[in-house]
Length: 164
Image (tube, rainbow, N blue to C red; front, side, top):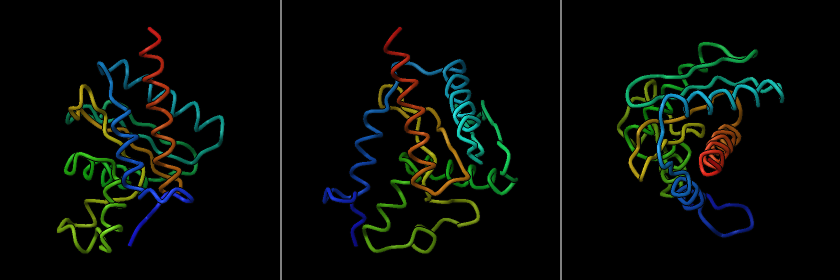
């Protein structure tokens, strides 16, 4: 079963992999995490998006925000999605798409406890020179919208980094 990008014939997982390859930082630190988190928070406020935001750098959560309309359940989703990134080295959306493209259900076929792992869109790895150093996650929207919001934030941060 394929999960193509509408009208392209390209599997969704291939499109996401390409995005991940493009989202590679020259450097990443606490200030960068703060700028990304602040960008996401300001965007959520401007568009009244009911999202929770988490940025993990190494094993440390370095940014967290919750907007009106979220709950502790969103925090659990953030953690579950970020565990998928840490385990698979890929965005949570891509991992879910890869399972679906094989005709499998992540919760059933991964061997991981679905209470601890969620292969739903919204958590994207932070890469520096190809190495994963953390992840950025959003929870509260449809999984494709969660994923796209994080990708947009990472692209904005990369553009700012290249402009310096």
